[in-house]
Length: 282
Image (cartoon, rainbow, N blue to C red; front, side):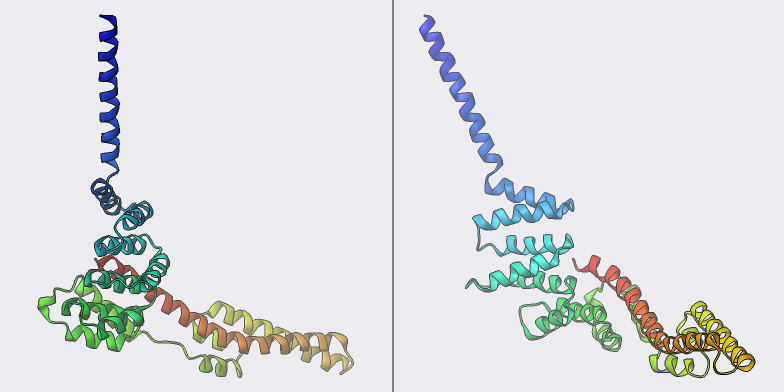
C-alpha cells in the first residue's frame, strides 16, 4: 500500500514539473517573444526592444516586419547609427527588401543626419507610396535647411495628403527663409576703422565695447608716453604693443564672431526642425 502511494506521489510530482517546464517554454516561444518585443517598443523601452528583436531576427531572419521594428527601435532609441550599421550588414545578404523595410530605412536616414540620402532614396525608388515620398522629400529639405526647396515641396503636397503639424511646418519654413546671416567680411571691415565695431555688428556688443576701450586706452597711453619721454620710452612701446596686438586680434575676432553667431542661429533652427519632424515620422 505504501509503495503504491509513493508511486502515485512520484507520478503527480513528475506531472507538475513537466507542466511547469512546458509553461516556461511557452513563455519564451516565438509568439510570446514577439508580443513582448512589441510591448517594449510601445512602452518606449527601446534598448530592451532592440535586444529582443535581435533575438527574434536570429530565429526568423527573413521576416522584414521584425527587421523594420528593429530599425525603429534603434531610431526611436536615439541610436540611429546602430540601425544604419545593421542595414549595411543586411545589404551584404541576398535577401530582397520589402517596402516596409525601405520605409523604415528612409526614416532612419532622416533621424541619423542623412537627409540628402533619404531624399535620393525616395526619389530613385518606386517602392514608396506617393504621399510618403512627398513628405520625406519635404522633411529632408527642412533638415538640410534648404528652405526654398522646402517651400516649393510644401506647395506641391496636395491637401488630401493630410500633412501632420502643417501649420507649424509652414511657420518654420518661413522663419528659415527670413533668417538673416551676418557677413564675416563686413564684420572684419568694420573692425579696421573702429576696433570692436565688427563684434557689435555680429551681436557681441559687450566684447565690442571691451575691445574699443582696451585698444583706445593702450593707444592713448602709448602716445602719451612717446610725447613725454620720446621714442626710447619702454612703457610707450609696451602700451603700443598691447594696442597693436589687441587691434589685430580684434579684427580676426570680429570675423570669428560673425561666423559664431551664424552657427548659433543655424543650430537653433536645426534643433527646432528636429523637434518638429522627428515625432511625426511615425
